[in-house]
Length: 173
Image (cartoon, rainbow, N blue to C red; front, side, top):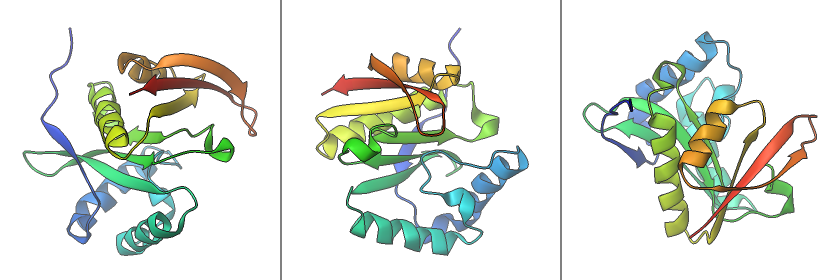
């Protein structure tokens, strides 16, 4: 039986989100996770405004333009997840692909990862991505299911520089 999820949308980070965003970050750290995938390193920032400034600066100056969005519950603004969409990739970013994403620990296994990636792919297409690349570690069965549920086709696997085997998927728009 499929879990019914609340209505959600992607929103650009804004200063008004400071408390919700830092609560989101704290949940990962409390769960013992040291990295928040797709967050432009929110895990490394104890100050949301500094992270927001870094994200805005990075988006303006990166060789590879990208946009970061929170997945927010419409009813109350609760942050469920986050994603970063690279508007293009080159050989250096192939392992990361176009979309990096993450769902907060307490909201996993409820369908939000699938919805987050679905919305991110729509956004990627609107940003001019013609063929989206999304990857996950071979050991990450949940992410593999999310990617496959969104209709991406398996392309290949390879060993990343950290020794992990990565699965690469593509979707043509």
